[in-house]
Image 1 (cartoon, helix red, strand yellow):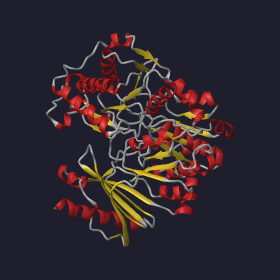
Image 2: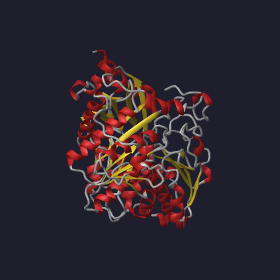
Image 3: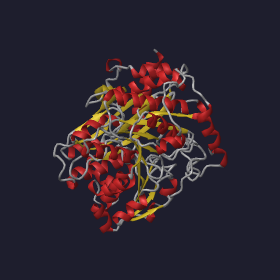
Image 4: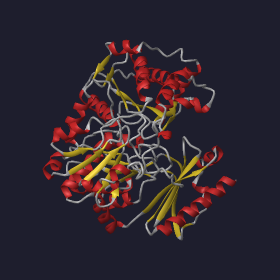
Length: 547
């Protein structure tokens, strides 16, 4: 992985997006539904693309919005639809387009009172709150965000009444209908003028911020943070939660400093990521350079990505924690007696490519482990049924139950995870970096890395269809192989392969959006052992691709 010379530095003017050109392309380019890259394609986090590439344009949003209206009618979803957007440049026009279609279809839409930004977890919280306390039809939601993707990108995702990301069956239905509308030139999409939609009786203002902020004490021990006087540093990274943090601090009397309240769709105030792109990745030490440099000014600091569903925890003892490390700290704390009202059988949820330290934390806490394929949608049912207490991904997304053991969100919540880091610091008197060292001192120290490697479409297809029987690996880096999986232990196809030994493992999955495959590997011995695991994994995959 070659690191750009710009990594960790503020971007030069040449790297900034021409916002006028980008937004113009949203309206001017009409995608060709016969071209695969210009069709509606729902990945693990909705449809994403860029207007200048013909993959995120007005035509896409018209088609997807109408397809969602059609889906709601088919499913009898008659409650309000909670609509939110982040701070990416394409989110604003996409919000307007979606509202035009939703209002024309008579959908009761709830939007921010000031037409402001709404984080992904706030939408999930609103859906669950409505559906738990109202008999007036089931609610669902749309979040307009490409997450931490570069400023040129747009994203559009649908959350059904369960409040979490839509599963494959739902997205396939919406995708197919949307592409049919796109193929027909968009004629089937009903719409009205934006100003008319804003005045429509079906479009109502909803105080997202107040409802979410007032409810935070049900999931986080805010009083413990206040009484301990924990000094908190917060960098919203120019994202959708930018105006949430001061009201949170004021409401609960927290000693919190919001380091940057700026919103600029070029994101010129962020340091450049590892590959020379501007990316709002709160798990990247390059993108988080500004907050890392100030870590020692605070007892705990954190940032969130653009839609605030991911967390990046910065501790004075170690700087930015690897997401796997903080998940281990959070799980150990939550299952270690801090949530006595949770069911004793409530499990720890993780993905198959998350660190094995989580397996050991669950075992030490005498909690079940629920290991699933990549994608937060796999956790939704367990969170709703309360059989999962805490669930997280290696990509820094996680959520947890309320203190009374009822669901908080069924989507990732970076805001709550940041506040959980402050709660942990307040109640243990130690920052999460120190706590992680204590955990690995007891349970073993993992060495974990993910690598993206080039792969053609055909190679990705082979990897996707690889069966355990085709993996001829009796040993892995000198240890006997104990399992070869193409399905997660708790169910669901991995979309690749995972090979496990007693002291390490690797997993390989094709990317859904790029011509690469992702190689995850971990050793509980040392870095040299990790390198050997990676080398043997690449050798096996090279033989597979050569067939």
